Length: 347
Image (cartoon, rainbow, N blue to C red):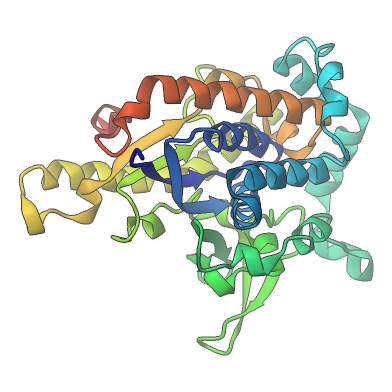
């Protein structure tokens, strides 16, 4: 029996664009040569990670794929996503969909309300719309000691530092904390068993999107595959208020990831001069990435906030195509060498 290629997954957050990650995971789970050992996820990446882990415990790779389908059916408010697949063919392209949503009355109204009010203004009528989805997870499986190790990041509002939850720490409130955009949702309170204090959290994307350092554990493999859903570069300079706000959002949610990648790049340059036990753990890491910047440049924060079933189907399909291209080009590189040129990225 062939030895499987062990990898860790780093899953970015990005609202409805997380359906791209759904497609990537769906394709990776079909690959018999790959074993997923660790998952670090933030926001939508945390939801994807929890679905994969709980489904895997239930029924292996097929169970994970089914659980991911369930998650995005819930997030898209459609009981069977296959119902929308044929309709998606009538939408010309993703840029058309983005523009249509941006200028739609529901989005314009919701955006205006979000800019002028606080989620605390709703008082006793406030309800987090993601709570029903988060509560539906089976946490004995999400928190199981066997299967892929799962790490979920959230931002401590008071300290401004990232908090990574794992194992039995993961709960409904942890998933809601990781997905808590402060302009839309009230901060999530979580009791800290170590200090006895109640801490308050916002979306993990501000401090780790996703956090890579939990995946440096020596019990985990050397390979980290980032599923990137926030474009690193945009050729056009933003000029409209919507474009400016969108690019601010993308830069903010990429900054923590780029900082960690820069540190890894530096460690690898220094580590190349060392051997054996002197080599730093980060210098041993093989970094990989699956992304589709062409697709993501057609989209904006508008489509992140409005999980249209048409968009989710398109994103899943794009994720599967991107993962398939990565596997065709780099399956043989996994556990041998990295496929991101970090020196060029930060040169």
